[in-house]
Image (cartoon, rainbow, N blue to C red; front, side, top):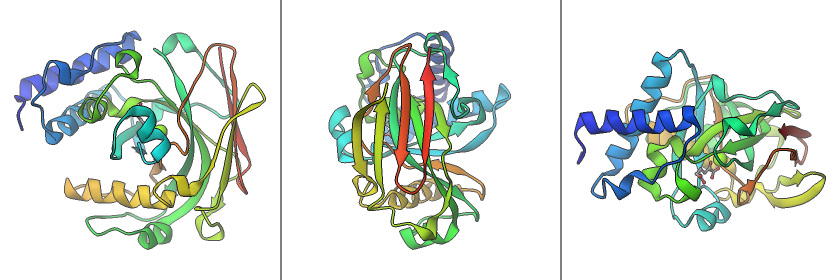
Length: 262
Ligand code: OOG
Ligand code: MG
């Protein structure tokens, strides 16, 4: 670790306050160019501890930058992982107040719910499919705390990979009944199709993103607990949204999920 513990704490607090006060900031590697990967996840862990002390509950995890479209959009080349809190959940069909967010974007995602604990290293796609109960459509609302979404991997990891809100719903299906690589998705904004793709855009199969998450947690001595919700990452590039926008995600065989912005 290149950062002192006090600096890790101070950075987590800074990013937490930016989120709470709906205020953007410059990326933290500008001030800490020598920070390590461990430092980045240490800041994220510290942020999680702050949230838990504040009464939030950990309900799952997200993988991000798992598709070429997302990597290209953000100018990076490897997946990242973050945590999901109960307070980020938004009910299907309800409204999100854009005044509570800095510069929200939406992403079409395929989401998993685990039935059994999953433990890495060595976790593979077969184990993920065997341990997952359900798969369902989800819209992730990302909201980088960094000005103009301008970040590098260490900065975005520290910022809990831009996590802000998520909406899951539609028709949850048994994982084993679907071929997730060929599962088609269409994202609509105000009734217009603005992005589309197939599950294969996410690392060949979105279940691979879950196995990578499990191996990431395993390296750090953690397990993905049964009952976790996992967002496997945007299938397409993210779409910016404004007040008044209506977003619907349709996923083949899994119905649709919608949210409005005011
Ligand atoms: C980082 C988060 C990316 C995804 O699904 O790829 C992400 C960002 O692009 O701000 O959640
Ligand atoms: Mg995402």
